[in-house]
Length: 112
Image (tube, rainbow, N blue to C red; front, top):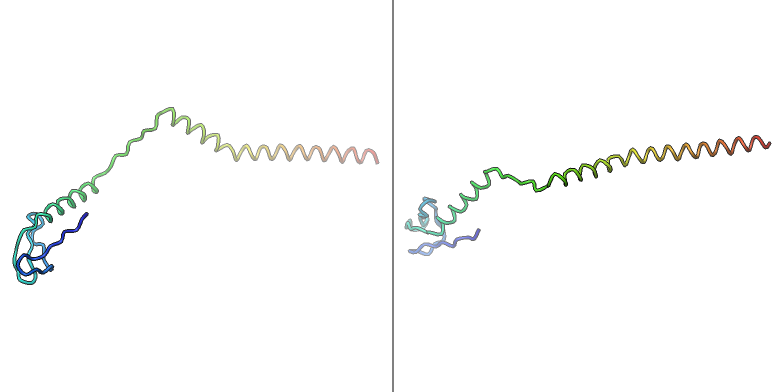
């Protein structure tokens, strides 16, 4: 919002009081002269409009198609299994190493 520069038309003072925001009537605090500033009416009306708009709930549209939602579900499902798949592979590799060590140990003790 732009600021409105107001000075008294009689004494030149910039110290004023807004008496009525609807009409834009102001009064000089120094000489007590009253006058109307139309810029204040427009500014207060705009501020009221913005405040009212901020109070109203906003509806946000979901532009995601059903196919996109299914694809995202599949991807998140595959990524969610990543930890389980990793554990299974670790167990399988561990078992293979254990079997190989057992075979090596058995053949070593057989040859002794």
